[in-house]
Length: 411
Ligand code: ATP
Ligand code: MG
Image (spheres, rainbow, N blue to C red):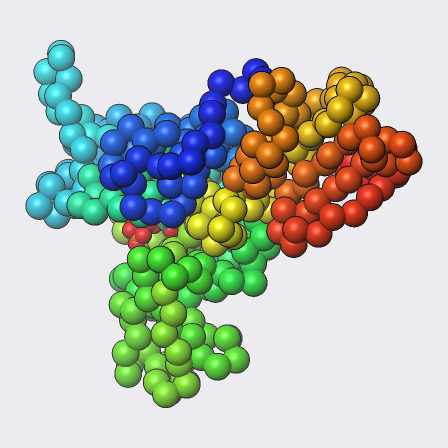
């Protein structure tokens, strides 16, 4: 993409009411704009990051047998009443609205009820199971506090997956596969070494659920990690009973702040029983489907990664999710001509700062603020040796490569 054609502009300051670092930087760099507290617009650069995160997640969910679909966000009152989750006194984050034609609908905070209900049309026999379904969907939650930028939105993007299994054993086998897929996702997103599978409360059907917590100073959660990093426990279940169960003692643990970037949960019959999702086994007996749910906060991940890797010059994107791999700057007549040539061939990889009115210093500052992993400068001077200058955003290290070597290494 040519910078002259990108409608977004960078700025030196963020809105005064924006207190979070992730949103401040993302707004200044032109990735998002703020509509109101807890609601943001994703601009072309920001959308590319979101789509890249989704693609990593999609590949890993497909690899464990996930089928992608997209459900409506509008919710029927009746099915949520069946599970006793409609009443705003019980679920305090609902957004609800009136239909012009009469009646009340909700905006989905999550999708267990409608998905379980819909699957009654598709599951009848043991032969129909197991099924693994996921979507990338907008969730609405009327969060009381929305001060963490895109890490806590009143509207946000989630990947939610659900398994429908014939037995507890079948579900548990999938639970382990999902856990392994989550590890791959966070590894690929560049936060594998700071993201920990954490014991959390489980509900009626399993002792524990698991959260994936990324260490982050401004994270909203507190977790406890033992010395060899093999056990993490969230605040909710960090008590004597759980410690005894895990064969650990309190004094071995250190407190960290973290942000929950995903979770996996055994639901058992919690939804299939009240909503009547049944199947017939080999012998003609009817059973409820055994379920689990698997969430990943897509927009929260973008905020966590922005926040975590940023430095005093701006954003620093990992290669896997950056909107562009290279920020291209031409200096001097020949430098600019060479940039145009390279850009013609590989426009997808480059954000080419072709603006004629911007000075070199502004372009360098923008490349840093936007966090593009590699800044490529081609100038009349580098061209005298047939070279390009490449600067790594993370380390600040610069090296010279011949044009040929550079082109060969592009992908
Ligand atoms: P939290 O404890 O942070 O409120 P949760 O336990 O309510 O999250 P889930 O309902 O399981 O979260 O949602 C799955 C994932 O969606 C979470 O792990 C988190 O990454 C993300 N998420 C939850 N709430 C928000 C929000 N308000 N804004 C952005 N992402 C969110
Ligand atoms: Mg939670």
